[in-house]
Image 1 (spheres, helix red, strand yellow):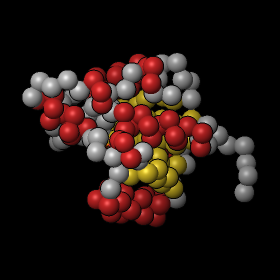
Image 2 (cartoon, helix red, strand yellow; image 1 turned 120 degrees about the horizontal axis):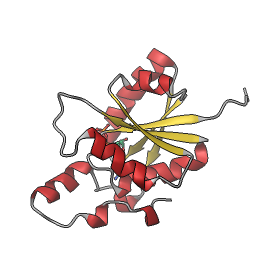
Image 3 (cartoon, helix red, strand yellow; image 1 turned 90 degrees about the vertical axis):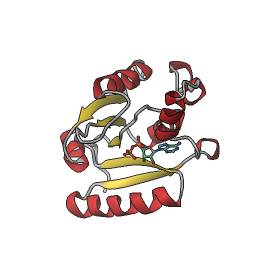
Amino acid sequence: MADNKPRIAIFPGSFDPFTIGHASIVKRGLPLFDHIVIGVGVNESKRTLYGSDDRVEQIRQLYAYEPRISVEAYTDLTIDFAKRMSASFILRGLRSVKDFEYERDIATMNQRLSGIETVLLFTEPEYSSISSSVVRELISYDKDVSAFLPTQDNIL
Ligand code: ADP
């Protein structure tokens, strides 16, 4: 049923760091929603290369000129974060069969627990092999990863 509620989605992830693969999902999700909240998941027991403040800051700077995108860190369960943001949708990206199985289980559970629907977008083929973990690996060998990191000029 149509109503006037803004269509808000969260795009949750670790974003350690935020890559051009992530930026592509945000860009393609934007026409589907009025607002996207990029949620930087903070899990104290998970070791990350970048602290949560740095990850939030990196992404906030990228989207500083796009009022339909905001960036928040969160520590609670993803569906509770979604509710706090008044979001009815969770946006995620799918690269592979491996992603599919994982996403299906979580999406099914989230839907059952909260009614929040997950919207999955297939990766653009040129980004299918890009992951934060590969970028972190390259960084650990002092390689230039700039080709995999978005800039303000190429995100939207
Ligand atoms: P998580 O730890 O929750 O998987 P990630 O930061 O690795 O967080 O990813 C966040 C979301 O972005 C996930 O839905 C993931 O599948 C998607 N994603 C990551 N890399 C890409 C890519 N290259 N293309 C499309 N989607 C991607």
